Length: 213
Image (cartoon, rainbow, N blue to C red):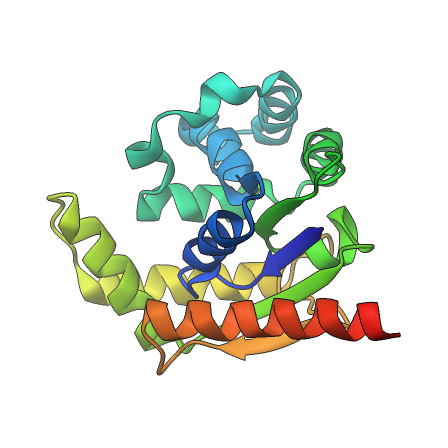
């Protein structure tokens, strides 16, 4: 069973995807970490003329060893870098095979990102699109960062999220493109336990419907 989970930053998609992976005992990949790792690799070059070439080279050289520094990868500034490299077509092409191979494991997998249900795994058995309003997403990300001992400027964080939303919406290669057959789950007013129950109900209902048909 392949489960595709898409949605904007801090919508809860990563937490839900990892929860679904545990529930169904499936391998899990946070594909956003791939773009964050590429962005982090070219952090000092974003304004230079060689930015795109450096990002493409970093994407082609990416392996699992680049995904271990979770604190750096999940920092708010790294999310902004990720959205900058994600609009580069050759970066997306370089990372496609990595994601596609993960999705096609014999027992299935759970992947979360921006274009899983539309591009990486359009044949996924179940597709979810997770959303929440900007203020709720800002507060969730702020609490995550504070739990790690980081000081958070909520005003700046809110505008980073809004900026990333705007960039993702304009990205022709991914972001905010809900698959026609994806189930929409709004987590604005849900805690993680309620959201996970809702996601599991969607997966179980979808699979039961397919078995019945």
